[in-house]
Image (cartoon, rainbow, N blue to C red; front, side):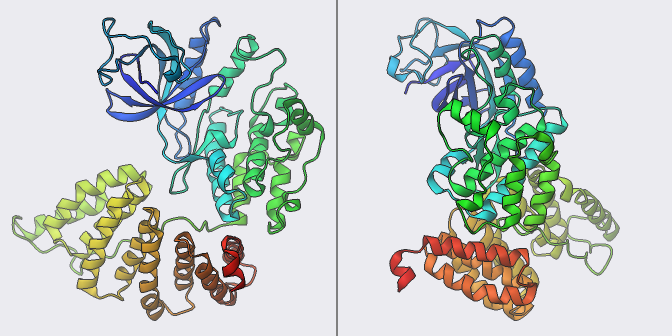
Length: 534
């Protein structure tokens, strides 16, 4: 497919998705030198004031700040030109423009003349849409679905508090990266589309806003939506992730709209018999016909989800409490410092600089730690407890920010340094060994992570005890990585041995025990027939 240039700044490289109203491209922003997603709206200039209305909606969406909402960078109108095949990395000129092949236009037409388009540029999110994941994998494991539902509620809570509705919550509008982090797309854009639809230019008469399989009854009736409409769509989405289909399937639009308004949905338990009653009750409450019968806010749904599963299984271990400073309240003077007093003042300044670390976003934490690490090495030394703590925190926040490979490299060295200084079974050494296994798995190598956890487990049990809750967590992490390595049979064996110990320590109805049973069922379903009967 040919490349295009937009506004002399964005090089449109490949189409990521295309719908009736817009085309989304992966693009290179030549000014900021980063990849972005560019959404080009189709044929909106026939509507008076369309660009201004779109700008207002995009500006509103751009004010939303959440790790689960795609960041809007820019909105504007700009000139679109096909790239010069002989010089695709440079904006085309009138002299170099050539007629584009209609088969290579990505839905943009084949007119080589410059033309003005409305566009919005957004954060480019790696990963897959929930629609792709659901099509390939649904029904999905319950812990995974509940974790995603939490993140979606976090996004909706931020938007609704700002007075912004989504109006088109559906799997195709939500991305999940390989760390399981959700990003919701298109906040604010749906309202703009509704404005255009009211002008009769982008939809047929009588059309309603949204996607029929996930549309609330009030949307289907053409009534004004409020935040509870987004919650209904959330119920449809969760229903599909749990069962493989939204509550009323994917039939024709009139039939779907009728069912949303008049037909009570079946419980997801009719399709999947391993779901707890509380989960089914929540889904059905979200799908209530009357908005007054639904949970009244994303915050309320989030609290229900927290009660259902207070400890998501796929979260990285939290960084430990910072170890106490050296026995002396002032660091000893080191070469290059004028006195012990000066070194002590510098040490205190470093401690103050780290006080806000727990409140920072991962990327900001990484920047702070990288700035402070050389000072720690200079003042305390490479293997001092305070320096090791900063290195440990840096690895953690690098992983949280998405740079998992660098986190793994730092943790490998940390394991070596902790082991040299304190021994393989020191609590600090055990912690960084466990973190190394975690980020190794998140880097896409669960097999290597399983080997690390298998090596860690005996030492962990010696130090903490075989039935300590943290030891049991390591055993569960080992089962998870073993299954993700492709060995479902061994994962089943590990979980069958783990669950009685978990029940003995935590109680048979503890959420961790219930979740482990759900995971056991998941891996049992992934076993081959020969494994199941052998």
